[in-house]
Length: 145
Image 1 (cartoon, one colour):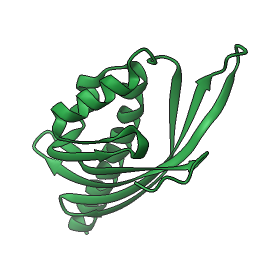
Image 2 (tube, rainbow, N blue to C red):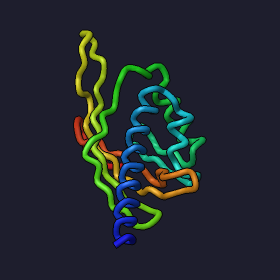
Image 3 (cartoon, one colour):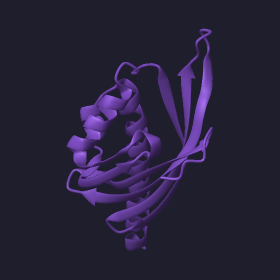
Image 4 (cartoon, rainbow, N blue to C red):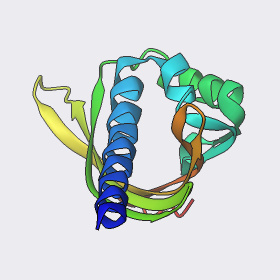
């Protein structure tokens, strides 16, 4: 009984930690904190964000996002929703939906993109990290990363 309870608690902790990884991803991206953003990836981590580009390793990932977001930090915000997890020991596959809300030219806001990320995540000594993150834009385009 104690082993079963311990296993359930560990599963819940892993799910909470994975969910926090998604929250941090959007928060660091929107804030322009590309050092923290890149730290969410394993040393051999790969991000493929379709038309934004592909990068491997934290240094390349930081450079890609710094270039992509130059002059645009604070103009859009990511809502991360509908997380799904499959955890297998020290690795996980996950999927989340994302929505980008942007400042509109008329002074309001508008939803500019909807999509999803499909991930391979690994547990490291410093916590869960993205090993591979693939982005798919479902609206407005049909890019398949």
